[in-house]
Length: 378
Ligand SMILES: Nc1nc2c(ncn2[C@@H]2O[C@H](COP(=O)(O)OP(=O)(O)O)[C@@H](O)[C@H]2O)c(=O)[nH]1
Ligand SMILES: [Mg+2]
Image 1 (cartoon, rainbow, N blue to C red):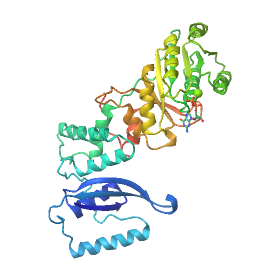
Image 2: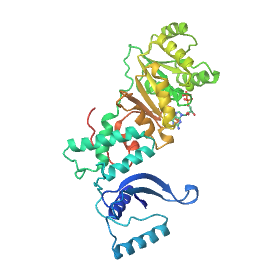
Image 3: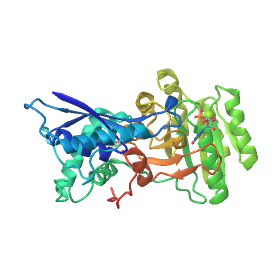
């Protein structure tokens, strides 16, 4: 097997080099983004793609002396500038397939997805679905539309976008936020409270069952005081009904909960019991995009007994890698997925919150930022 690593300013360019120099049967083995310069500072970002070719008795493309000279000149210029220049410019759609039948370009996207935190099974499922989707659109070769657009449409159909909280004057809605410690539950409760109170002019109340840490109650109380909102503190299930009755006259009650370790069954059971006594209309699981794929999976499993009706993704501003969290909440063969309700992108109350939308999530999830085509209504 021949294995070679190519560097270029863009994935597209690297694929062109591979296709030209190794031929259409090459498989993408690995892609990564690299930065040169000291510790990644002051350097340029480029793409490094490793490709392999099964031994078939020599490389299929024999370089002419002229091509070789050109490539060497390109490399010298590139290394001088700190960026490997593509040796070939030309068509941008690398549609060639390897022996598995997966177009080279999609293989590279699959590697990038995995690299950015999507599980290998999910990444492969998306690629397979993209090929079927393209075929169903009469574009099996991927020549009509860029593969990235097909990929976006495919993943877009799996993303579940839930509705934001709907309130109605005189019809109290009870909404609980649950999730691991530090993901931004209390801050998000404050953002929602401010939005509904100030923008929508609803009568809003707060209730906290975050009583493990005194500071946590004080944090919410400070918001309640600034916004002049009634607030109740509940420690035991039997206190829940009377507390909710005292907030009976409102349009929206937001319940903040203690951040529990999703690994602690006892604490999750306690939370389930407290929430059962509250009977919330909606329970939003708060997940931070800055968390690792493993902690997101653990949170989803750990908080399953609470039966979340939606998920809120926080800290989008802290990372560009939302792949892990998004691939964890989309529908799959063994999960129907959790609909996304809100996205938060900063610490500012009340501004840094928006309702979830597929377009902005997809542009963060998928390998390159391109215009998202009109998504089919799921
Ligand atoms: N960068 C960023 N920080 C956030 C966001 N939401 C919350 N935080 C911060 O995350 C930290 C923990 O937030 P907190 O609401 O106390 O988390 P909780 O333990 O889940 O209630 C605080 O410093 C918040 O300001 C967000 O969207 N972006
Ligand atoms: Mg909190």
